Structure formats: structure tokens, C-alpha cells
Length: 371
Image 1 (cartoon, rainbow, N blue to C red):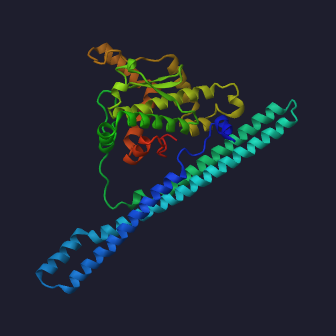
Image 2 (image 1 turned 90 degrees about the horizontal axis):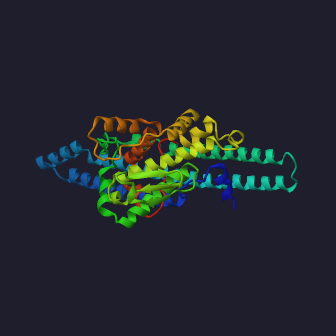
Image 3 (image 1 turned 135 degrees about the vertical axis):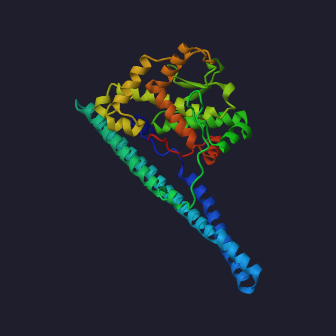
């Protein structure tokens, strides 16, 4: 087993299994086939009617069909579903290749380290760290190269639409600038899911975000004592605390991503200050940009901010000038601005399909916007 290699380098194989994309692809293939059948049938019906009928009624029917653009729309929709099907097929193949390449690289490092330890000498520690750093760089290259390949596979989807998409339904909360989720996701979370399903989905969301940062998943502790807050990242206990009394509110979805980002900020600070940070490169910009979407300067700002944190007012009703000023200092500090931005982006892009997977305790495969 080479799992320890991924933990040591902070680079893990894809969280989403290729088989999940294969299942999704089967659904799109079925849809493409049905649309193709509908397009053919509709075209034949229209052709038969216009060929075998004359008069004002037939002319009106032909004019109506031409104006509606139904045949063209069906054809366009068929092309669109076929494009999506092809994109999923390509992405699934890339995920298979990524996992295979990463496992091979981890096995290679495992073999090389064992060989180096067979005849230890004074240079052995340097050799071990050199091998580890090289493997880390190679794994990062595999990860980023294949991530870009998957992005490219889906890059043409936006251009397939012939109509302007609807405006996003997510709206910012007037008090915290917190973006809410899409109305359909909101309904699913608040109306269609049980408390147990929400807890399962919440942990799946946190697990997925942590793994993307190369971190072990953080446990959610359901703690009503943190009220009136939705959630809290507890660095000392290494857990994310969530207010269970707010679990039936869709704003919790934003909170889960927000608090996961705080956990990543803490890990970034630890990476920067690690004993061997200079040797294995965890304190340089290339590493921190790839892993955390932040420069070393930004991480230093986070570190200073944690040491001089501005607490939010304890009273949930802010009705004095002093409380408003305190609340603005809380909102505007670097770690909160960064986590809020991340939480908002996650909430704004969360889909029904992703929620269905989270509900089952599975990762959605959606990349965080910063990485």
C-alpha cells in the first residue's frame, strides 16, 4: 500500500471515482438516444402533414412550426446532450489515467525509499527528503495536468447553448454578505431531506473539501453552544463545529465550505512553518498557490490575523454604532474575507446533482473555485 505517500506529499488521487462519471454518462447516453428518436419522429410527422395536406390550415401549421423553431431546437438539444456525453466519457478516461499514474508514482517512491534505507549512511536523510520532494512535484504535475485536461473536456459546453442562461438565483444575505444556494437546492435541503440525510451530506461536503487540500477529513461536531453562529473552526480540537439548531437552514451549506476554508488556512500556516518546509518546498508560492490558492504573503497575513483575531459581537442584534464597527472589523479581516468568498462561491455553484451525491455520503467531484 502506498497511501502513506499521498499523505506525506499532500497530493491525493481524485476524490471522485471514475465509475461515478460512467454512471452519469450512461444517463446522458440514454437522454441523447431519446432526443434523437424524438427529433426523427417529430421531423417525420411535420413532413407528413405538410406533404399530404393543403389549404389555410396546413399553411398556418407550417408557418407556426417554422416560427416556433421546434425542429431546430430539438436538433440543437440533441447536439448538446451528445457533447455532454462525450465530455463525461473523456473526463472518466482521464480520471482512470490520473489514478493509475499517481499509484505508479507512489509505488516508485516507496521502492526507492526502501532501497535507500537498505544501506543507510550520513547522506540517507538528505536522499529521503530529495526523493520525497521529487515525488511531490511529480504528483502535483500529474494532478494539475490532468485537472486541466478535464477542464478542457468540458470547455465547449458553455458555447453550446443557443439562449441566454437565466440569472443566478443565489442572493447575498444582507447582514453577512452570505450567498444563498440555488432555489432548487434550497428546497431540497430544507424541505426534502431528513435531519440524518443533512448530517450525512454535511460531513461529505467537509470531507471532499479537506481532501482537495491534501488534508485528512475534519470531523463535524454538532455543538448548539456556538449559537447564534452557524459554525466554527476549532483549530485546537481540529474539528468543525456546526450549530445543529441551524441544520435545516440552507445557509449551513455556505457555512460548511466557509469553515472548511478556515481549516485549510490553518493547514497552510502549519505547512509554511513546518520543520522541513524549506527542504520540501511547502513554504514557497508555487506550492501554496497550487494547494491553497494563496501566496505565502497572504498566508502570512492569515497567520497574523489568527494571532490578532477580531471577534464578532456576541449579541446577534446589532443596534449600536460600536457593535456595527466591531462587526465590520470582524467581516473585513483577511481570514474572514477569504473564507466568506470561498463559501459564497461554493453556495452559488452548488447543484442538485452534487447534492444528491452528498446526500449519499459521496463526493460530488466539483472543484473548489480557488484551485
